[in-house]
Length: 127
Image 1 (tube, helix red, strand yellow):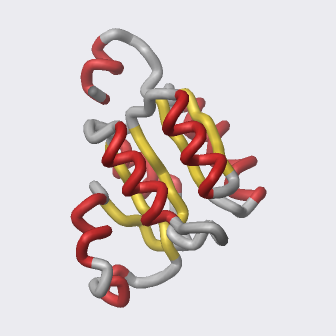
Image 2 (spheres, helix red, strand yellow; image 1 turned 30 degrees about the vertical axis):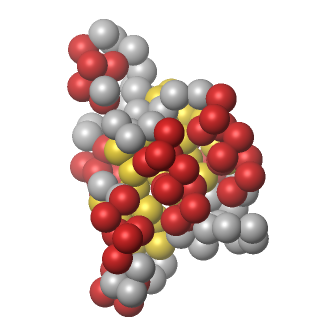
């Protein structure tokens, strides 16, 4: 789907889920400069609502979004309703410390560890 959106000259749609206002305010303009259409959510309920109402090509979800739920909840919902979407978990934890959550690791396309540099975002989502 991502390739189709780019071929049709439509901006690939990104849902970015993060409870940190600074991340939600600074990253979307950067992604938009690179041709992405970005929607943001600050909580799991907001993200689930967006997933149920809109189609996305890419999900960028913070692992520790806060209660209720977490990034795994958002990824699970995206995989269930929009399985073609690229899903990326963002976390301050090392991936090796999360191996106990094997099912969640299978759901994600990739993981990014914080701090994240712009080139890591760009290479993970294909720019």
